[in-house]
Image (tube, rainbow, N blue to C red; front, top):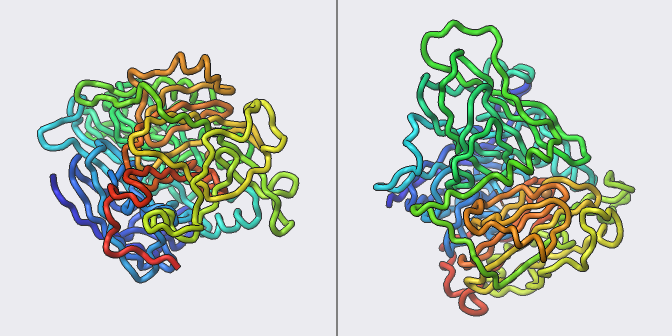
Length: 541
Ligand code: C2O
Ligand code: CU
């Protein structure tokens, strides 16, 4: 195993896109930021130097950091922000994952511009569970906002309404041919005819699930969230914010270039940006340039049925070299409703439904982020920061996907966390609701990957639905799209002591309270089996 050292210098830099110039927060002057390249088993020490004007934290999305939540990074969950003018070193431990992950700022909405890829190659002496590709391309789906992103979210939080949408989607930082002033800089992926490439696709956008495809080319999904899958041939993928997908693509088509494109999947009621970002798959060599380029065929904006079937068709590789570890019996069962809600308007000037402010919740509790990080409060026994009473079940049973009003419309607020004993075998059923509006939610868990043992539409039936759970080759992920008006059953072993955030990876929903925290306790009140904190932690004010 190797040790790598990285310096991440956070600072503002001007970029010109969509005909205008603006300053954004970047890492090492680049958008997207630098790529971390390691082998499984390696360790990286990343020193973040904050040369910006406000506090920020960095999170290693999908890296489980065994027993070391101090390196995880979500703001005021595992650490306080790194103040401007200071540095903080995080130890990132790549012992468990292999494939593609990513890193991103985890403070307010700064991740819009502060993010990059993590590529974890097989350890020495091991190889991919498929023929070695001839080449690799990293493809980060992102966004460009003409406005200032932290201001956009602050405005939405104050008005209580939907935030402004981005002005373009991007592929590796470039909006592409279909947006103004972007044609010249459209990103090009160069390929040789007859060769096979591993495309590592990351969805880093703030608020949209995306379809992605390459015209006339077959995609073979071989990995999701740094875990290998049974190869699945498809002509499109649907990738939610937070997810990563590894695709094999063989360059076997006759023209010199083909469009690569991503466009939203959205089946809710609010109107979001329905534009399309493009890049070019460019064949090297001598071709007669074709005048028109084929464009990928992607499902319609609100094609929930196709997305549902896509999600259901994904399977773990579950081979001898890459076995699964899904609990077959469960010691802790949690049933969690995932809702949009409304809260009374603080300034009687809100643009949510009926003058309320929009909110979101898990089990009808809208999460309140504390001023001191929960990890420190837990480790040093500081009381009054959180309570250990997140309910394992919703307040009462209900026709969650049918009823749209009633007392569940208005959630309670609080910083209530879920407590686990070490090695509990856990099943969580996430149930979507149609309160306020029904839509997909990409649910994400820090510190673990989990197995998707069941997915369905309508209300979960705890007698009949478990009969069809997949315990043979369930998909293993850290983020999964909960279908609109549907449910997901997932399982994992609570074998990672620490404090771990769980939230919807649509940032507007994170900001409105669709979050909770899991604490896995091993060894009494103060956890003796977590690694001790680093010598320096950013101070909490
Ligand atoms: Cu991509 Cu809380 O994470
Ligand atoms: Cu959500």
